[in-house]
Length: 190
Length: 127
Image (cartoon, rainbow over all chains, first blue to last red; front, side, top):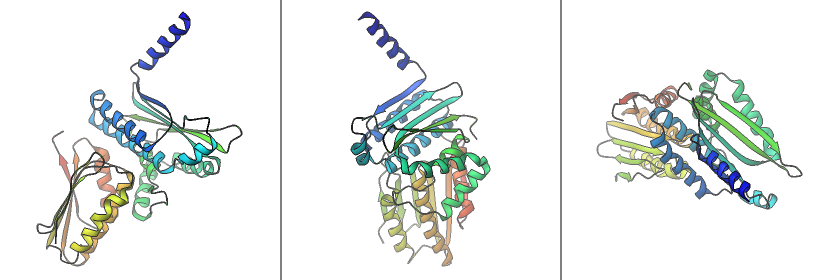
């Protein structure tokens, strides 16, 4: 009993460690995305002295959460992954250089190829090319059927100085993958 | 015609479009999930205003944050102002950004690049 308690305390302390600003793993709803956003807003207001970094973190979190809002198909998820209510993962960490945001959500297997190739193409571009592509898309592009502007990842890439990493993990026996994106934000992100 | 006045919320900006003065103000945060829904009344107002615009129209943009879907909607607002300019009226855009906010300056430059309107970059000094 004592060791279990010890472990829990230790685990709690590690969660309390200064570098975790916010950690969430669980079900997703639009209200929840709003709540995460307002917690991030309030916490970085007193945590981060540099207005520039604060704005970068907030703007990128908005884009990431709204990306989930536009693309997360909660109904389909509940249908297929009933036993797993941990639909999304959100982590905001304070690092020596700045911040790290890790966001994860399930994505239908059929959609992984398009997303992967979109991210691969962004990561292959230079920062200059990303900025130009963003401008072109802003000028010519249209809204997708889901209401996204198709600019989100480009915007995140240019604001973070292309500090993106991502991963797709196939869910065994299901037509889903768990998609994780990590964005690093520092004052030198340009 | 009537002015368009929308109060600021945590996700949507203050809108004050004054038809008589020819002054249009957008200030605060523009991060709604459904930007098209929010910006639709602005387009409608501009369509009306366009019929009898003032000799000079000034559009003041003082945004703190905006999401990418709002930036697409802003393009649509600018397109309507371009139309007013094409009719021979004067249109000016004042794009405000905080001194150290390079991202907001760059966003202004994005619009300057793709929009055919005089867009003046203006620094806000107070934090």
